[in-house]
Image (tube, rainbow, N blue to C red):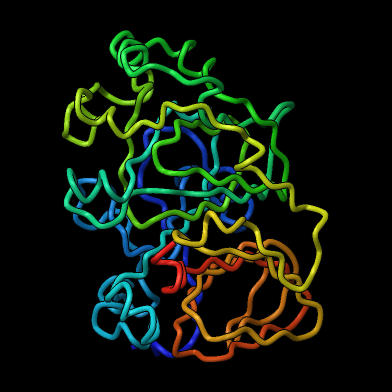
Length: 336
């Protein structure tokens, strides 16, 4: 059995999805098979909605990471985290390769999820763009103008895709850009955008534009019906300037990728290591973007994904490495 006190390299974990993609993940991980799927759930203790095991990550010794954390939460997460969140990582990280435009959708807030879905977590998320393909890689983020509830309901009822997509802010993206997506804000990821996604640890999606993507409308409303689930949609206008950061030119030893608005949900920084760097003790999920070296005892290179338990202590990174470090929210942010 592997130790729960050391960093652990993880293999790809790609549960089936309804949309195309996966070539960018295969290239990133140097996989021979490019058809495994458009999402790689990294260090996941979360299942796909309605599934018992799909989505969960296995450790190299065969255990589900979920079960390992439940058996020894303090080693994995640290005493302070457990005091605030229990045996809950409070984080889900994915690699996501949009081989086609994703449908217009949104996610419920903590309050909506607690009231209607029996879960403390909704699904606020954020994207770190690590690759783009094609002539105009674009994401769509929030309504450009306030939209009345009756109009949203009509768009969904008639499946007016052009109206839904046309109402959103189109934002061109390139590697190094980060996008914060609060719960409720309608959005879509365009074809050719490859991201590291951080999110709250649920698989709750409200699919406004289901036709051409899902089998039927029943798959799009979390079993609640659209009459109820559309209450979670943020219909007020959003400014992309409040949600998008351009971080490519920032090259400090540790670049904070999100503003304070993300702190109650997750934390992420981009590490630029040349030589050695010691990292403070923390549960963390790492995706190596460039270079090669070691993360504690684990040899890493572009495409490596590693989960680090809190009990690993002050982990030392050596070599020439650029990596995304993803962490849960700090307990102090719970009151934010």
